Image 1 (tube, one colour):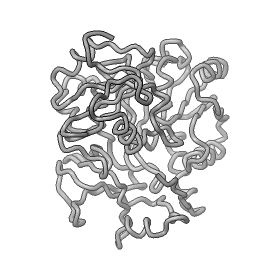
Image 2 (spheres, rainbow, N blue to C red):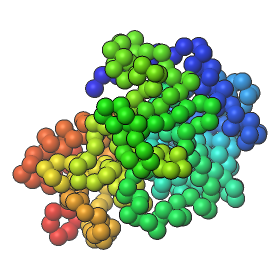
Image 3 (cartoon, rainbow, N blue to C red):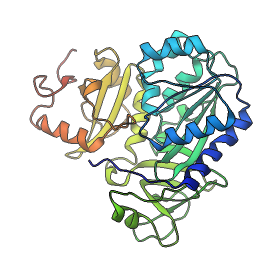
Image 4 (cartoon, helix red, strand yellow):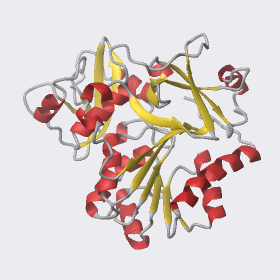
Length: 362
């Protein structure tokens, strides 16, 4: 619950910004780049340095509401668009509105982005060869691993393999010359392929320390320089990293909450958010819709093959606690759900609950 203050050296900032310049050079960016990210995040510093060095005209959007962003994109026609994953979810309606037509390169960093959002963004551009660059990372190490999704191919194979998708969220490979990844058990022993454990990274652009919490850096940095990300995942024989969950938020009834959320959002486009929590030997989906209406019949049909899924708790999207970058604060959300009472989660009078699927109708 305490905001972390992350200190970077000049060398660390330069390394991370130079790393971003490489794809910019490869893409041959000509025209505007547009970005919507939190100014308190180190990503803002790195992004600014990279665009200034490449002399790319940058549009920084302060108001990230679709009604504000849409006219800006339509006026300036950027070919590059970057935002936090949860901001991209909010922008999904802009795809059908035509506001994303000029974009050829989408870039999302640090947090997991759902496959549905990637496919929606790519469908919204007129470019036949548009790409979505998905980066997994964190403030302490910047970019850790990444994937490139190409328009027309994104998610085509995984959509047919639900069992595989529920095994975790694939985030790609480590970035050559920038990061290395290993998976270790609780004792620090390196694990083999397809064995889940703690995700540790060796990154050249690693942060210096937490000025307000020096001990936390010492606790999570090994003597040989590997940083423990606090995440849980596994690598396959090809070196690809699959993210399961945060180490402190692991489920006992399923391999990955993130993976279940990917499937729920894919199957139900009318959901704006889905967060899976575990309580009393049951998986509790906390969901928010775009319109406020909840389709009970479609929900039941969509989760029929998902085990341990309980009745969804439908709340207003604005009631979901988030960080400055839009990431859901799961511990706070779990506390909020707990406060609504064990006897009847469907009581509309308690907290921000709108409705649940108890009963026959909506």
